[in-house]
Length: 492
Image (tube, rainbow, N blue to C red):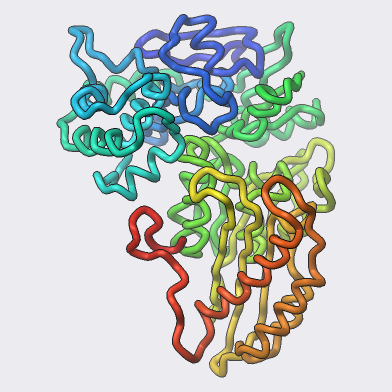
């Protein structure tokens, strides 16, 4: 067992003991390291002004990710190398290609947001398969907001930077990988201090033992939700257990039961596999938060916190996902929808944790669609999200239906009356109208700042009509998606 965390800040090895478990990377950088280039904007992971670059060794590969420093805890950096805007310029004063492009193409006015943009742009350059196209760049920078410059000069700067040659980090990649490999010691971290306890278990057995000892400990994977509890809710968390680096919770694999996603797998890591199985799931993930949020937030964390407006659970429920939980040496599996009991209450016992979720391959003849409705395309909380899985036989009759919504009730849940109205019927206009009538009985949504109850009920029914327009076996299908129209390409 180790009583301190170890990581690199730039080229400096940091070994910290008794760190407050909820000390954010942003506060540590600005207040304790004097690195004020990283700015505090919203302090909730929305504006991107605090974006930093984190390098990790995953297997034999060096992986670079942009994350929001304001909602990441310092202890989550254990085993990593952290870079801020101060690390970009070479010792001789030469600017990084991204910085030079921002200067050349006038990508900055007041400059407050610029360090965050620059760090996101550096990360995008290091993304495998990244291309200098408007849509891809817009997706990469959707988590960075600018009120002064306007985005066109920044996009032009990104394109220029993409055409530049290797940077100083590329040249040092092998050395960075070697130093991070040297930090791997296979030990659990446990730190006790005046402001709380931190545990970083080495594996899921150590996690189970930790929770058996302290069932009230708060599990943190990506901190994209818990971080706001601290920065906005000012909550004190006496014992934080960070699972983001637990190797046996980071599995993402196809099994006989389907796609198994471990509890520490982020949305960014799971997106391609989900999209391969359920294309609309990939599009939902594309609009879930920002690049920084998807790089940190986990699929299972979105489930475990039980939010009624989480975008992931309705998609997975409609797909028939199974949830795996563990308490000590005991394990159990349940239908995902059974996990959500009531607002703020889930079927999870004291000391029990989510181990993984399995998404089964859809049966032959399944039509799967998922639609996110929000006021903004990017980085917005859903007013509602509907996910639909219809299995049709050769005659066009609906053999099975699974429909799930988020934002329509106090928990993510299925539209069971609507499903019954569809099963056994040919997928035609009459069946659609019966389903539209049934969905009015499934939910009694509330009115809040995102939508009124009337809007939610109306849109939920209209999504059935959209589903019919896209999947009805006969007749002309109108264009319902903005394919080929700029950044909202394919499956909006």
